[in-house]
Amino acid sequence: MTTLRLGCIADDFTGATDLANNLVRSGMRVVQAIGVPTRRIEADVDAVVVALKTRTIARAEALRTRGLAFCNGLRSGLKSS
Image 1 (cartoon, rainbow, N blue to C red):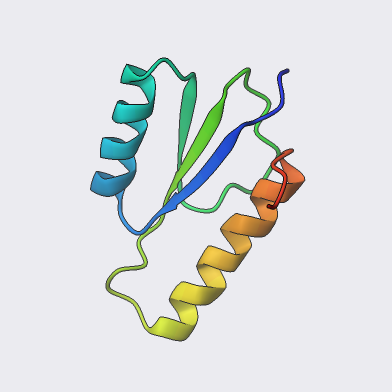
Image 2 (cartoon, one colour):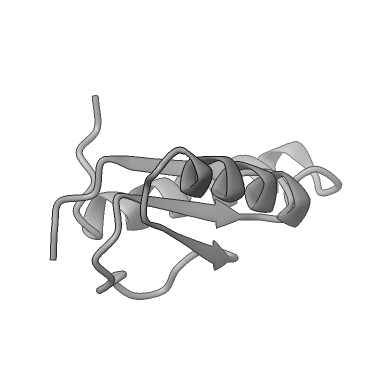
């Protein structure tokens, strides 16, 4: 498995799909997760796009969900910069 180069968190499925599509069209190998990944992503990809449903929920819950997605991304091999 290669080192992930990019991790993205989108606030809805449509935005995540649009972003994943653009990354693929630019030559990246991409996997899209629906919701917060609960285990390490074991795919040979350059980028992971996480689709959350945070646009329509309370701010505190949205921040908690995004934080979980970020922490799980770090566990999957992404480096924070």
